[in-house]
Length: 242
Image (cartoon, rainbow, N blue to C red; front, side, top):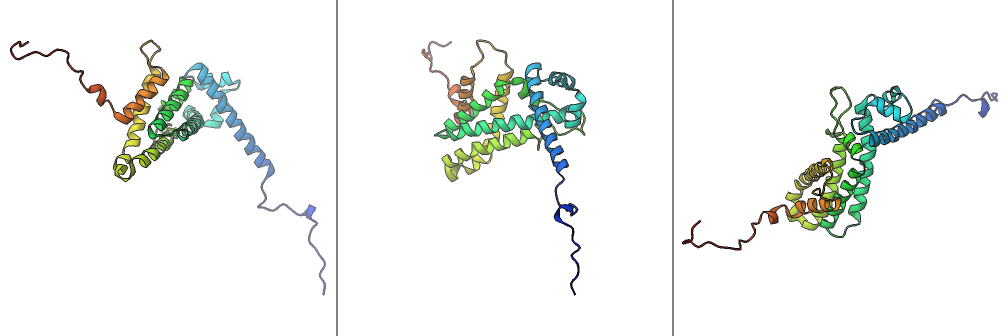
């Protein structure tokens, strides 16, 4: 016996539960695009207004209300973390490019330090905004410099980039040193760099290139050569005394 075909035409069949909701996808895409635009506007506002710009200041500069920023980022700490992820990702990419163009490990270090200082110096306000904020509310999103925050991830990645050419240069004998040196090197680069950034311009302030070479020299040879006393031009005999 032949049973009649009771299936619906394809055009009349109900949508599968597994099929994506087109409206939901479009809305999610719109939110992501809007979020990226708000991050870009916040970055411009901080660059112009300073690292201590309030959410209201940022929203006004962006031509919107601060409630929009709160809706997308939760609070100022959330905004700072979002901006930090973008800025630090760009810095990491630039530093990686600089390292790949180097011939020797020392040239690689100089290239990376130079790229870091150059990008941080391009907008000190934005750099400070994403690296120096500590939220008073413990329930706020993690501070970018805290473990797990974008800054911690950024410097972990840079430490690995520094270790790779050094490990290749030193071979197996340097493995013990390489286990500790990259993190120590990152601490030196960051602290010296941030002190340099915060130093007011004056004839005594090193140029960006001079500072990059100085930091690289500290990383490679330390300050031992600078501690060597200059040879005395005169010698006193025991009879002459003081």
